Length: 145
Image (cartoon, rainbow, N blue to C red; front, side, top):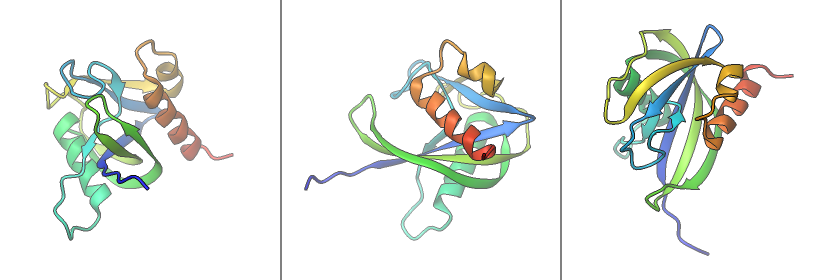
């Protein structure tokens, strides 16, 4: 059996009035630079902490786009290898929009913010496959059959 150690990343999908908040990642970002993604980042909580996923995504959303979120719901997880070769566990969450106007608060990490309807984001030329997959999973989660 191979030994794998993963960086834990959490993405927060925020839907407000039927529109999804996406960021355009900074061009110099180590992973997926310049691509459209959902706000998020890595777990930085010391051992023994509680509500790790929720605290991580609230912190990242506040730091990156200045929006406050309420309830956080688990949607999906997957693993991938980042552009720098590190192994990542990615957790996708649906976050309840509470307040704030989305804007880039971390210019090196976030070049711009955008609100798109599900249909708009699915036809956007710069949407990478992983972001499209996360959007599909959230849309399915939000609108069960």
